[in-house]
Length: 157
Image 1 (cartoon, rainbow, N blue to C red):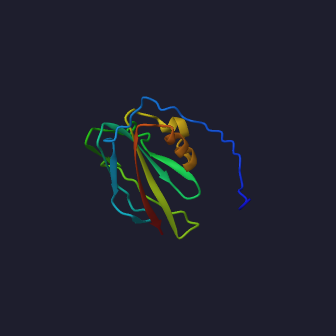
Image 2 (image 1 turned 180 degrees about the vertical axis):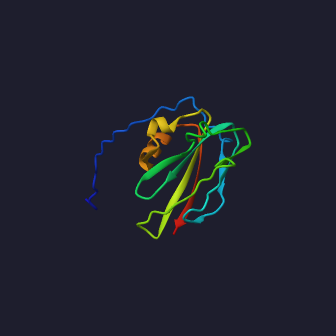
Image 3 (image 1 turned 90 degrees about the vertical axis):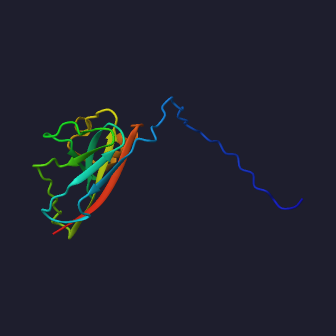
């Protein structure tokens, strides 16, 4: 009698991650700035990073089409250590970091992805110097206590 009612039976399968004793340090953060947002090929980029805690910085350069490089630390600067409430400048004085566009396009849109960890992790050994954005994200996602910062920029001819 009355309006028919549809009844559905649903079986749900859930995979629950147990809450660990880990508590994220909410005061652990980084900020960064770049000298420009738009570069002409061959111009020098300078990045200044501030960290609230002693940490180890890694700078990834994300390119279009899922490719990525680890630009810092490198063979000249091995650890990327920054002190509490301290600054780190990349590149160091006396060196330079020049940006170049991909000749197949009018401009190249890229991102500096900066990660700070309280313990040193050698991402070059884990990922290699050249990797994919997807692989970087997979590895970084598994690290609990980290601070991250992203800055986009464009390189033109």
